[in-house]
Every structure is written in C-alpha cells, then in structure tokens.
Image 1 (cartoon, rainbow, N blue to C red):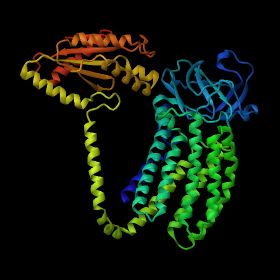
Image 2 (image 1 turned 90 degrees about the vertical axis):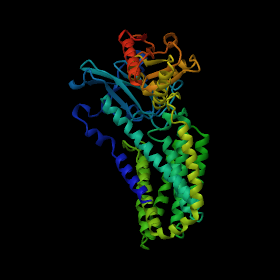
Image 3 (image 1 turned 120 degrees about the vertical axis):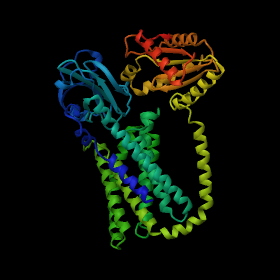
Image 4 (image 1 turned 60 degrees about the vertical axis):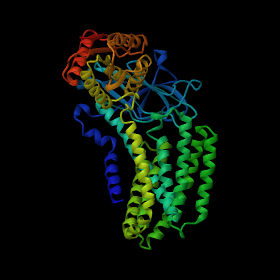
Length: 573
C-alpha cells in the first residue's frame, strides 16, 4: 500500500505540470504563442463566398454573444499574422484545444482541419474535439481564417485560445493534456477497482464500495469530458457523448454526497442525501430525453441549488473536525478542493470565466490522493491484524495466482504477433529465418527472402497523420495476405518494412505480382508526386551464404537498389 501511495504521488506530480510550464522549457524558436488578439469577424459569411463584406474587429477569445449579440449563428474570423523570421520555411503547427462550436481552420484560404459541419442551422453539426493543423510558411505573412457555427447550444464562437509554434513543440504540448488525463483517469479507474475488490472482501465497510464506485464513475465521466478521450477511440456522436458526460457528472455528485454521509455517520442528515438524489435523478432523466440546449441550460440553472449542500457539508466537517479526528480534517480539505474545482468549471461552462484548463479533474485527483493517504494510514495502523487475517486468504491467493498464470500463458501465445497488423512480428521472424537458414544449409534446399518497403511512407504520415498511417499499414497487409500462398511466412520487419520467407524459387514472380496488386489498388497518397501508394521489393535467393545476417544484408541492399532505381520496383541480385 505504501508503494502504491508513492507511485500515485510521483505520477500525479509529473502529470500535473501545466501547458505553459512545459512550453517555457523550450528554446526560443520552439516556444509556443497564442493567436489571441484582434481578429476581424464576418458575420454569416463563409469562405466559399470568396470575398467578404465589412467585418467587425473582435478580441479573441470571444463568444458570438459578445461579438454580435446572438448566441446561435455562424461566420468567419480572419487575421493576418506576421511570421517570425526564424520560423519561415519551417513546418509549423496550430493547435486548437476545442471550441464550443463546429469549426474549419484555413491558412491562406486552404482548409487544414475541421471539426463538425460549419454552416447555417440546416447544415451545422456540432462536435467538441481538439485538432492540430500543419503548414510551412514561405512568406512574411500568412492569413488565418476560422469558420465557426453554433446552433442549439448554450455557447458558441471563438471562445478558446489556439496556439502556434514549431511542429514538434506543438505536438508535444498538444498531446500533454491528452496523456495526462488518460493517465489520471486510468489511475482513478484502477484505484476504484482496487477499492471495489476490498469492499468485496470487507463486506462490512460500505465506505470502500462507495469510494471505489465514485472513482470508477469519475474515470468514466472523464472519458467524455475535456479533452474528449472518447473522440479518439470511438464513433460516439457529440450529442451522445455530451449526454454521457452530464449523466456521469450527476451520478458522481450523488455518489459523492452519499460517501460524505457514510464518512460522517451521525452528523449528516438523511434528508439532504435524499434531496440530492431526487434532483440528480430528475436531471439524469431530463438529460437522457432532451437535446443539449435543454438539459445544459437546466443543469447550469439548477446547479446553484447545490451550493447550500456544500455549505452544509462544510458545517458537518468542521463540527466533526472538533473531535480531533485527523481523517475528518483530511476529508474537509479534499472536499473543499473538489467543490472549488467544480465551481470554477461551472463558471467556465457558463461563460463567466475563461480558465484554460478543466479544474474538476485535478481537484478530484487531489481528493483521491488524500483519501488514499488516509486509507494507507488506516491499513498501516491495522497491519498486525491484517497479517493474521491474511492467513485465511491463502486459498484466494492461490486462485489468483492460477488465473494470472493462465493469463500469462495466453499472452505467451500472442507474443509472436504484431499488435497493429496481426501478422508475425520481428521477434518471430528472427527465430524462423534462423531455423530456415540452418535447415536449408543442411538439406541444400532453395528458399528466398523478399523485403518490402512502402514508398515515401514518411510523407504519408506527414500529410495524413499517424492514425491514417497505421490504417494504411493494415490495408497494405490485407492486400498482400489475400494472394500469398499458404506456405509463405509474412512478417512485419519494422515500421513500414515487411519481409516474406518463401521456400520455392518463384520469389521474383511473387514479388512482381505483389507490386502490381499494390499499385493497382490505387491507394491515395497526396503527399508524393505519384499521388498513390506503391512499394519497392528486394529479392534474394539462398545460395551459399554463410550466415543469416549475410542473406538479410543482400536482401536489404536489393531493396535499396529498387528504391534508388525509382521506387515501385522489384530488384534481385
């Protein structure tokens, strides 16, 4: 338990560093800049128009309500930006954390990224998500255009700051919040499961069960909240995800109040808990049945009613702390932190403040850390009793060990497989090619190696992004798998390189057939001059090589010659 506490503290400290602190550790040319300031807003005008009428100068961040006096509308924000001398002809990136609107971002009239569908109400489709746009400026100035629309929402407009800088720096910083929330949510979820398991064995401690339920519920809620982890791994709609965020938020609050009631048994009135449950239950039903504008408006209107609950809870905690219970004092500190974070996020969601980060997540993480410290202390004080009780758990430990062993055996069966493409991995190939080499050397059998490399794959990643690059690798493997003979070993050698082991002397014709299939698949690759995906092949047949390394080196040289000869070729020596 002590080690778990130390691990949690270390990880939380590392991931709690905010966006700007990391940015300041960069060199001058890598430091990030916001694009806040004066933009020109063209109300109800889109990029498709080509020319714009008289616009209005607004200071970003700014909402539609503040700019033009209406909450639901659409338009285009435009700004000319002077490119720093050291950034010219270098690849830059603009990170858009998220906006309370659908948007499309342009540089010099070229659309780079979009979220949702921008346009009038009959065309608009909302989606909350972060995006990063990449471009290489060659002129002294560039023009940024941001199309935005918002309908049937509480808020709308250019309300969050966007950042520009060196591509590597922006990527590093834009991923920071995503990874930080992922790690924190994962820790919360694991801690919740740990508490639920404890509650299963310690059936008389409801606090463990409710605390674990709160951790798991908040981790699930975080999946749908900023920075919208769900958008990376699911196809859930914006409306569905927003409903899930609000429903789990209400569940978390209801569970939290009940947890406080359990902690302060005898001080906390039951009618307060039942009242909170009733309000949260009604809001959950309304959220499930109504569109976002309805339940969001109601949610922020009713939330003020929860303030008396907070003050009542504070009164109970102070009264309990007078009994010199250090756990009560720890709970009081944690609860104040949680409610402070919730209030700040409420004010941000209402448009009252423009805090850059969600505060509920770190506040709850701190609260859980304090709870973990309290639990660790209680367990440390009861250590001798637990040692005695552990003797009765030997049978359970044996069962868990058996299950773990079975899981490990299952994992060992998958150790040869490439996690992305599903074919053999480099480790399995190395074992098989060594066995094949030794066997062929003894039996004087013919066999061949075919090395394959996707042409200009880096440019594909640069143009479409790494997610699309991973998808291309899967499609590429599927094309090859469909025509491979059953006795051919197909493995991923590394990155975009693949290798085949075939035991016949038809390797050259097989490689040419594969090359043609890939070329004729007409997979789009706008990041290169040819505009489609091709591959190069290096073929070598075993003759009298002394070592596996010598054979692999020949295959690699042939692959290099295929690329040097113009790519999309088969080369054999």
